Length: 312
Image (tube, rainbow, N blue to C red; front, side, top):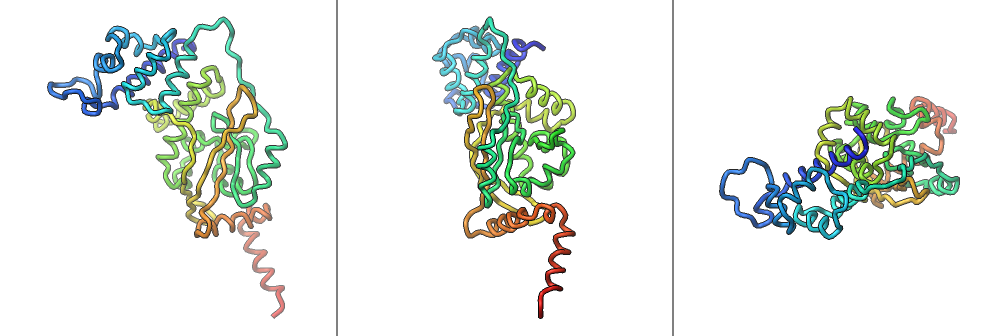
């Protein structure tokens, strides 16, 4: 499928899934009579947006090139789109515009030393840099300890870098590590969908989506929902194999390393004075001796030696 056909397919499916989620009651329409489709009919969306049924039908078939921003706004309002969905719709519209230039292929961007220094300075917070494909491209020591199941997974790439999507959908152990696997997985898919709308020419992203769609029924199901999400802060729960249950607060920040590659800096910390903070501090202490952390048996043996050598 070429890029233009793929763009039309995304527009068609996105608008159709949004339309199916809106009930007549939500927009003040009568509900009498038998309805053959879930949600709104095309003619109802057209009336709400102030356009003809023929015009909206053409739009929902993917013919979005040349459509004005005012009309797209009207359609977004009619379908009760949130800000993230509206942004995604406009991204698809921009990607549909004819261009005489060949889309520039995105190149991997190296994380500069100053960013790694910043990460390393955060000793009581887990901090990492991820790209739009959800590859973890840089991290500090506490991140390596916190996300040990991901780093130790067979889903890491040849450089040992974890990818959140590959871990959640290709490693069964992710269900044990994530406190709410379904939420984490659906959020990851929605972020990939947003990224695909923003950068339709990203070959590596399309290869990742193709791989996961081929081998994971769960991914295919979530991808078909056409949900979109921009990374926000919040709380996440983990079942850490060393320190037990953890609930951490996280905050992503945009990190502008390149005009052609999106990155975010995400910081995880615990609520001050909580048991989660105590567990995170314990994990931070263990990261001060990386070899001991990687081999729990060695760490416990060292504790016993210190006990024996201590004068009575």
